[in-house]
Amino acid sequence: MKKPYVSAGRINLIGEHLDYNGGWVLPTTIDLGITLWVKNHSDHFVFYSDKHEPFGCSIFEDFPNEQGWFQYPLSVIRYLKLQKIDIPQGFELNYHSNLPEGSGLSSSAAILVVTLKAFNEILNLNWSSLDIALIAQKIENQYIGVNCGIMDSYVIAHNEWDYALLIDCQKLKHEKIPFSIGEKYKILILDTQLPRSLKHSAYNQRRSSCEQALQIIQKHRNIQNLAEAHISDLDFFTNIELVQRARHVITEQERVKKSVESLKNKDFISFGKLMNASHESLKKDYEVSCEQLDFLVENIQKQKGCLGARMTGAGFGGCAIALIDDNFDMDYLSQLERLYYKNFSIQPKIFIGKERCFS
Ligand code: ADP
Ligand code: MG
Image (tube, rainbow, N blue to C red; front, side, top):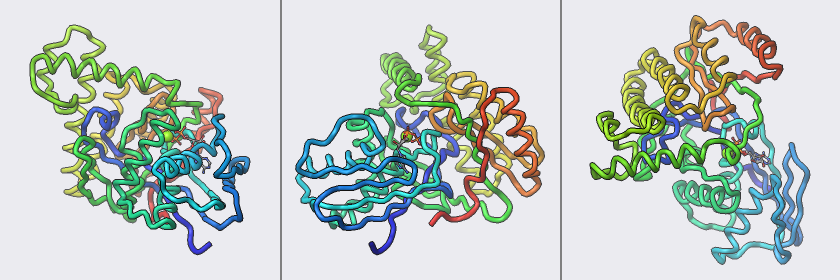
């Protein structure tokens, strides 16, 4: 056991629900993440995680199909076997994490990426960060059964803490946008603590609405992805719900472009306003927010020193993020937690998501 492998969680600063629409997204990694220690073991695979039951299995046995956290590392092994990559018979994988699970901070991509990173190095596989991102997405789609896009594994695999990555999800390229928030700014994460599962949410419905919207536009114009559409393309629609869904995608793509300009100019005030507008669009047009997310976002937006706030991730629960500066009164956060509890009888978790380097 020489050194641990590390993968951070992620937040998407702006550009929500654009990855599967071939658009541009702007995520960054956070201060919380998963650390993996790898040890030799005689003849079995053993997986430990500080929050879960251990799991053991032999490479020669049929792997179990029942649900459980162990399916994430096990799927990596399945993938390696399928690729006919020579795997040693025994390994101990030991995960430690301070990254909340199931909150929309992409712990699923983080556990896959950290495992792939470890095997990449141990088995000299020469995978690039992009290879790791693509394999993690494939595993989550095909083995875990979650129809996720490329954004999460992409930003986690590239792990550029001082930057947000402007990812073109169609061309699979990125530009590094400086995001050293330094002394003055912090990103807060406001976790609704609502039970949420992508598989059981309306995520797949939104994807299929976007496919329908694209097909309507393609009857008139030659575009490949909904994110390439123009606001005037909405004139082709008769279905109001599809108008709303497509309008979110089109306006959100514009907000991503403006955010990049703002961040390049270190204009955090304009960027904060774009975050607020993004939330409004996700709430009213894309309809993936919920009253708990709105409560946290709308209350924190009113506070002095809060430059902007929005839900992040797929929605229907999960987390919101807020950009704050040094005028923000941190004591307000316990008041907000109490207010939230009074309204929803759920204890939320509010914490600093980004202020220092995760290592
Ligand atoms: P999210 O990606 O938003 O955190 P998901 O539902 O996609 O939520 O993934 C969460 C699942 O990933 C957990 O239920 C667990 O099975 C697995 N997981 C994530 N982190 C860990 C960890 N540190 N140890 C074990 N399993 C983990
Ligand atoms: Mg996930």
